[in-house]
Image (tube, rainbow, N blue to C red; front, side, top):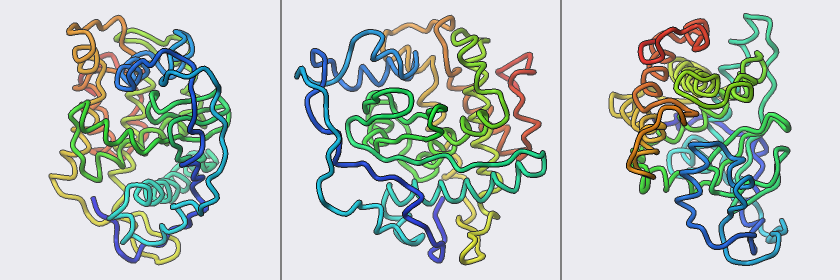
Length: 303
């Protein structure tokens, strides 16, 4: 999915912390790929709970600026979004804002914009210190979404996802989906019942996938407030395949099999590859938040 060249962006929408937070980290040099797999299966807190982190040093990294202007300041139009990942994240965030605000207003829910933070290696969040190992995530405490852009390369090289634009945009839309859940009150189910094939945790993640599909259903008609034109051009079958590829690549069954050679549904926290694809497709097909009630679904395989 490509952005219209005339789309206009506000770089201040994104907090660019890249180039800060580099330094020694507590731990014994556990590989980043393994930490990412653990985090995707069990959640970001597993790194701290197990006392694992990347690196071989013994200090705590300090976030200090490099003195250079953040690269995000150069992201001004759809032209840059079609060429650069960081600009694509910014453009996707603004498209999501423009969709969710009027959509939720129909239901009497006031949309507030979640923060969008780009970082390198590690950063402080309202949910604690995070490293690249956790992948993209949403912190409900500070209502911000966090992305180390290196994750998108790992999504392709380690998890076999497509590298297409909609695959990357799906990830951003999914994290925004968690913010929507925070606003409507469903996010807490992941804490109350975090693990298992039918768990609240799985239902929360699948609902966020459905919300991502909803955005995709409306994305090509949501106008840029500045230009009046849609942010995004109509997407092709290839674009859709890219998004489904990303959803499949982060299914619990696929990640477990890659990590251990076994699939254990009792340890699921995000749902299977097929389920993640099915619920994204459900949102895309209907464009309706009422069709994304994973908590009422008796069969998560068939929305």
